[in-house]
Length: 328
Ligand code: ADP
Ligand code: MG
Image (cartoon, rainbow, N blue to C red; front, top):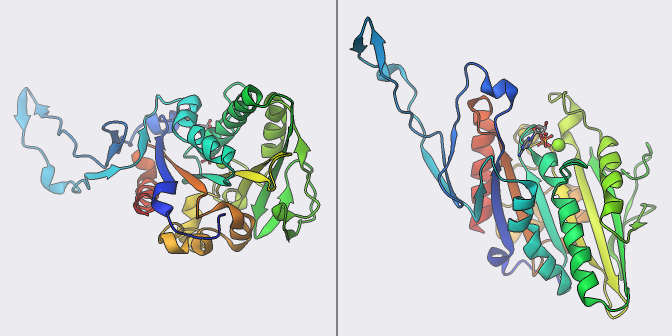
C-alpha cells in the first residue's frame, strides 16, 4: 500500500515542540529566541524591546547601531507546542490520529527530529514517571483494540533497534554483532534475528523502553562524540486473524540533526515529496522504513527545539527543515 508517493501532502503532519529553558540556558549571556505566538505559529529570533538605559537618571541613546538585526522569521506548522506542553499533549496532537490510519491497515511512522539536547528522547521515550509518546500511543492502541475486539484475536509484537554507522543492533537484546535486513512477503522488511517481544499491555513496555534506551550508543553528556549519531527505531507489528497483512507502526528517534549538516547524511530528507523514500534517511533506515513511508502511510514529524540563543543555529536549521517538510 505504501509504494507510491502520491498524496504526501495530506499524510505528513509537522509539529514543533519547544522545550523549557534548562539550568545552563537560564544563566548569563543567553536570551530566548523562540516566541510561540499561538498553537500553529512561532517567531524565530524576534525583535527585542530595547531596554532603556539610564545613566545618572538620564536616559541614554541606545546602541542599536551596534546590534545585529533580528531575523524575526514567522513559521507556521500544523501545530506549535510551547514549553508547558506535556508528552500527553504531544501525543494528542500527533500519534492519536496515526492510530486511526493504522487500524485501517496502513503502516505509519513518527519521527522526532532536532539537535542533541533539544528533547527528542524526552518526547519519544521519556521516563517511567513521565512516559513519552511511544508508551502513550501503545496505551491508547490497547485501549482501542480492547474496546472493539470481542475475543483477544490479535497479536502485538514490538522491537526496538538502533541504527548506528549503518549497522543495526537489537536494543532489547544487546550484542556487538549487527543484524541483517531481509524482505518478507507477509511481514515486509524484516531484521533477521531480531527480538520481537509479544506484549499484552502497554505497561510491559515501560521497562523495555527504558532498558533499551540505556543500551543505545548514546551518552547524553557527551554531545560532541559519536553519541548523537545513533537512530533508535521502535516498531510495533499488529496482526489480527482477519488481516492478510501485518500493520506496522514505526517510532523513530533520529540522530542529532547537528550531525546531519556536518555529514550531509540526513539533512535534506523530506526536501522533495517525490524523493521521500530515497532521500529521507541513511540507507539502512530507508530500507527499514521502505514499507512505512509515502503512499497512504501517515507520517508525523515532531521537530524539537530549545528556545535559547545558545542553540541559535541548530534551532534555525531545524525550523527551516521542518518548514520544508510541512510544504510537501
Ligand atoms: P535529545 O534526545 O534531543 O538529545 P533529550 O530528550 O535527551 O534530548 O533532552 C535533553 C534534556 O532536556 C534532558 O535532560 C530532558 O529531560 C530535558 N527535556 C527535554 N525536553 C523537555 C521538556 N519538554 N520538559 C522538560 N525537560 C525536557
Ligand atoms: Mg536523545
